[in-house]
Length: 263
Ligand code: KIV
Image 1 (cartoon, rainbow, N blue to C red):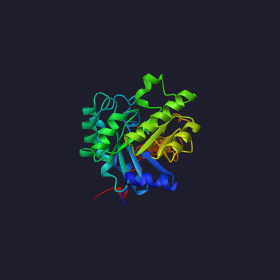
Image 2 (image 1 turned 90 degrees about the vertical axis):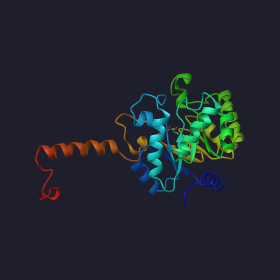
Image 3 (image 1 turned 180 degrees about the vertical axis):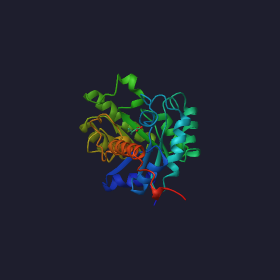
Image 4 (image 1 turned 45 degrees about the horizontal axis):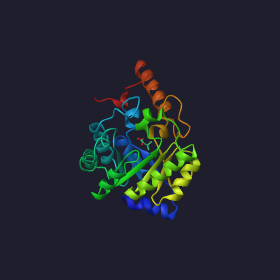
C-alpha cells in the first residue's frame, strides 16, 4: 500500500519509529522501495553525493527534477519527497509556489522539503495541496551563514529558537520535520513538543524517524563517515574489488569465456 503523509502522523501516534533514506536514481529507489523503506527523499545532497559538487548550493531545479523523476519511476509504495534546491524558494512566495508545484507536476514527487523557517511559504503550499516537510537545525543550504557544518542549538537560547521554529512550522502545516545536527536533548524536546513526526539525522535517538544519506548508508564513500552516519554495507570496497577482478580477468583472458560468447 502506498505510504501517505497521514501514515507518518499515524506512525507517531502509535509510537512506531520509521526510516527514511535519500535516493537519487531509479535502481536504488526500486531496491529501497521493495525493501519497505516508507519515505524516499530526493535530497539536494545529490549535489555532493552524485554530482561531485562541494556543497548543495549549486544544484539546480532541472537537476533536482531529473533525479526526482528517476526515483518516482522506481517507487511503488514509498512517499517520494523532493528537496527544493537553494534559491528555488527563497526569492519570492510566487517562485517558491511555482517551483514546489513542478516537483509534483513534473517530478512525480508526493511532497517537497524546505530548509529553515519558511512559515509563509509552507502555509501557502499547504493551502494549495502541496505537503511540506520542514528541515531545521543544521541546514546545509546555509553553510556559509552558519560558518561551516556545525551542530546547532547547543545553547539554551539557540535551542529555544529551534523549538519556536518547530512550533511555527507545525502551525504553518508541515506534515513532518527533519532535525539535522542538534544535540540529543534538543531532538527530544522538539519531538515531544510537536504533533508531527520528527525525522532525525545527527539529532539523537528520540526522534520519531531517522534518515540517512544513501551513500553513507551503503558505505559508498572512500574517506571517513560523519559521526552521525552508520554504514550498513561497504559498497566502496565491493565496487573497487569488482573493478580489480574485471581488470585482471580481461588482462589474463579469463573474460569473456565460452559462456559469454556467441557462435
Ligand atoms: O539533502 C539531504 O540529504 C537532506 C537530508 C540530510 C535530510 O536534506
